[in-house]
Length: 486
Ligand code: GLN
Image (cartoon, rainbow, N blue to C red; front, side, top):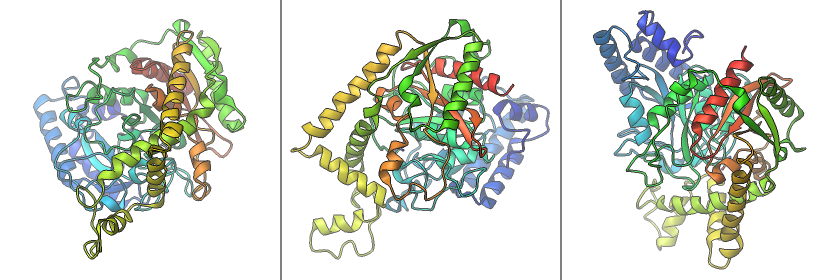
């Protein structure tokens, strides 16, 4: 377990430099803590891989005397990854019975780049099955416990990664965000969670859910650490045709200078403060905005009028793409074949047996998506959803003429109790209203802790900027983080 003194990359590197701690010691402690933990945040501890990486980090440290931070910005740093990203030779389940025994033959680009920078991957984290969900109750391997409030959900679908960072099992963790799965659990658990711009981080090695929405991003205890992880893993990758050729910005160096708030116009969308948003969430976010105004920022009231349609659009686009992406899990190309799968009359029966491996939420989405894409309904649902998606994007393009960044809540409420929404999928879907628009428009968004509700549950503020202005999101988020923890 990470001790309170060693929560960020800089704290750990300083301890390495001062010989108070070594990468091997840290990896050993972390692995032991993961194995003893009761959160169910991990589906697998990566003992051999982590110890080998930690030993290598020890050697590099011994050769250099101090951490060579330029070449190895993540030397000896324990990281975790959501179990929908592949590592060569390591089981990847997507928290599904369907992939219970799947061992991929390659490693994804993001992870490969982080390992080259010295990172020590200690485990694969739990998630909602195939990243479909918002509470981590949809995992075939059991729900994840909230890191500080037992009985509460950590959020989802990357709840395992959020819990792992908050509870001190790693310094940063990778998640994937299709409709909010990084920002929402970050907000619920009280950590930083960044969904980069669409195209910023290669998705090579991420099991696809909805390809026009998915992005990989970091959870961390500080905005600076999130920036470090993004700087290492971001940038063009020829193996992902949707990754942008635009070079990554110097995200970390940018944070060294203080932000000049007087140059920043902050947009506050009225649609993000509607009745369904909890009073405590509104209050905390408003207080943060007041603080931002006091620093000299110009506050601009804006309107994103198509926000009310975001949930409907998302739950057509995402399920349609999912139904197509998940067609590969058929027991022939990918997916577990139950023992009796071959004792069938015909191919339809075979599919039925194999695809029974999916859990109820995944099945629901495949059925909805297949329906929305079927020839008789395509125009009424999928095409229409794509058109409204464009209107949502146009809303953002328009308001970004008047502001540089948008601030608002991440989720309508704080973390809820396990079981509270599990039986009502619609309730769960509506909870995504404030995170989904970013995905539909390809924008970067980040959750930064900004307060607590009356029970003490964490609240995050969402920072949104135009596509590829991840640098702005980080810069503004960093300034808020510093201001709010003063
Ligand atoms: N909660 C959303 C969903 O269930 C978001 C999921 C995600 O971002 N992976 O689809």
